[in-house]
Image (cartoon, rainbow, N blue to C red; front, side):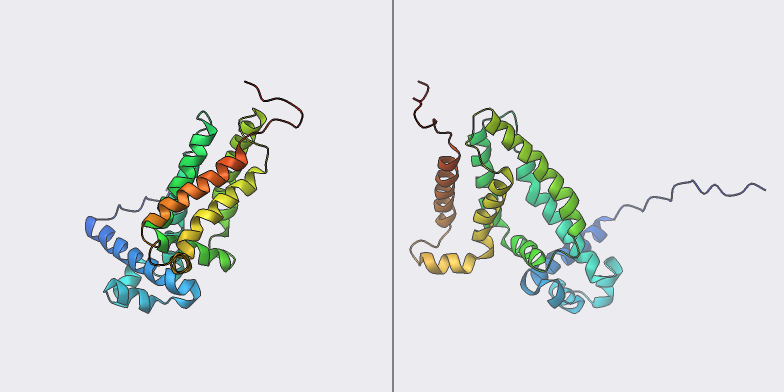
Length: 225
């Protein structure tokens, strides 16, 4: 009698049916609402089930643990959040690429404020549930794009600065408009706190970063005509 081959790969899980996929999407949408308001620790399965409009046992059939829902949300969020940075093209014009990155980050702050607040809450709590994603996926991409920025600086296309802190600054200034939306609208006042505030922010941030990154001739040297 032949012994079982332990090297045989386990069977792949069956793909979700359309109804199963729809149910998961409903749960994830409800969880996004709950987590973005209460954070991971404050959120409960009962709250998510109530917002999703389903029973707790039904929800647990799709996601047995709160941690699984949260990690799935953060994973998908991080993938979407990093897409604009992935698209920064090393063969493109540096100012065009950076301007596009700023614009897209502001668009995400405008269109996905709950996702931004969810991510911010996770970071404020030490990212204990997704630290591996931060240390691997996020770090490797930032390392890659920092090299692109440094190469542009070496070529004299950008003013010399720390590429990591440049990326951090773009994150901080663009995501501010999602994470502190109430404060922004309150301070701007009724006449300026509409959708146009994002266009105003884009113009300001483009000027700020483009001016700071424009190479300047060394003191005592005349600029090249």
